[in-house]
Length: 284
Image (tube, rainbow, N blue to C red; front, top):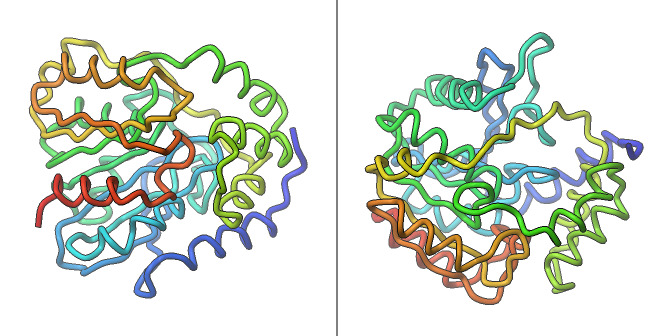
């Protein structure tokens, strides 16, 4: 594993967080699985919108390109996943090991924030968590949006896993950069965001919860409105297989493809299509 530099990570985290609206604030929410860090902005009395980042080196800060826009009509609550890179602090004697644990953690987080029902959005692994929570705790979900979700409607492409393997086996800044450059087609990436991904290499994270895709019968029973936006240039899954499968299984889904962007360039890139679709879906 690469040698982790905590000071470099914190500095990189703060630099990306500085791109958030000036009214941002940090919330610390105790849960049975540890203290969860939430970066919040927007009116305190606005409808809550909980945002879950992807896995790997993603953190709550990665929503910076969307935060100001969404905070016009929502109380934005972006979460650092428990046990993953970020400022959440997992409990020494307990961390999520199963999907049921993740659902219990998210329920406890909502309770700690004083939220009964929320709009929820997730990217990649965060979308997988959000979808499982919606299936197991539907009364707490108002609307759900999924940005290029993984392991929800289709499996990973073999080429994606092959390219990710060196980074997963021994994460180093160089391997993280090489992988992200491959997946994004070497398009120009925000250097501050990229530095944060590199700094997360070797972060002392707990083993992430993984599992199978949700069962078809469970997806068919989900009654919440769902917006599914997949990246046209994503190398994680087959873009059109994902949208077709979701349209077949989810009773209230809007599925579309965001042009000109890859999996790992979401959500910190800001294609106009993304902001427009999220605003329309969430409503005023």
